[in-house]
Length: 100
Image (cartoon, rainbow, N blue to C red; front, side):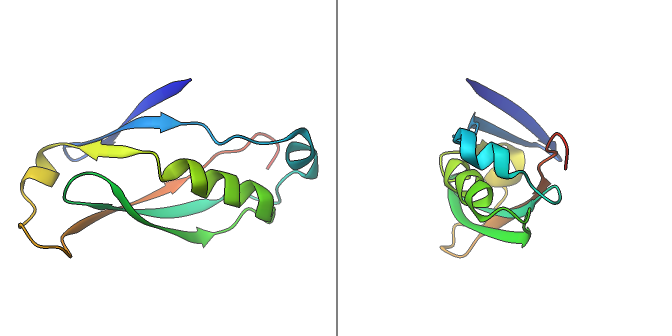
């Protein structure tokens, strides 16, 4: 099931899909809520994902990172970016995990 996220400042993140996890991955748990920097290019596509604070569960972090690459973003901030290959917008997002 997909969800949308209002990232503020004229940015909407859409086509958000939840990470697919196995029962084993969920049972392994996470030591903390992971934080990722998500870098969007001018077209609103994910260009890079950086783990700024891993959860302590590599399998979970890998699943989250894989899901993020399907996300898209749009809004006035993207329209204002220069027409250059290195023009990007970075959003830092912390995933709040139950029990972490």
